Picture 1 (cartoon, one colour):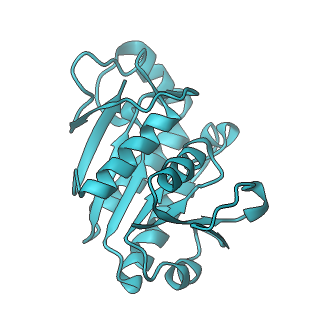
Picture 2 (spheres, helix red, strand yellow):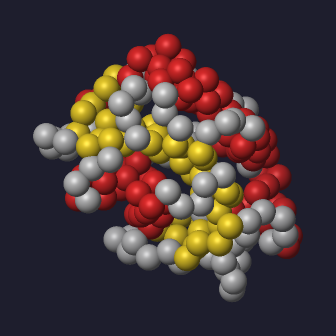
Length: 209
């Protein structure tokens, strides 16, 4: 597959690039700062561009089989006003049809599922700007006439483990919104599995260890 990755310099994005190349895919990393990616591979193309720029995306996207977005705000931005996810999703939803690309996969958050008790409620309050942005992003993607998949993982940690469980519409049985974790690498593995197998089309999917 020819994969187009947004957010390739972030933690999930780096894992996406690594696993995708290991699986033999052609990868385009569309990033603001290509110098941040030190990896070199004949199947990896680095394209400088702004993920909020519709024209830049429309120009770079043709010929790709799927777009995977692992964009996210910096921690300090998540606690202040941020519209990065909504704006980038809006740009992508405009650019994909122009470029003839139908498949789009994106990372969201399990805290958008209901419940979780007082700790989850406190986290939603502390990160209220981020969760407003997440909701707006999901609404924009879900309204688009494309084959989208939204992944909602819980708290993410650094690990080499690629294992995950997935459940459309909820976290898998036994998972907890607050205490469950998943590795950034496992999120990348889920997104790539879904892209390769055309799984979870137009589904919001809870994923966890």
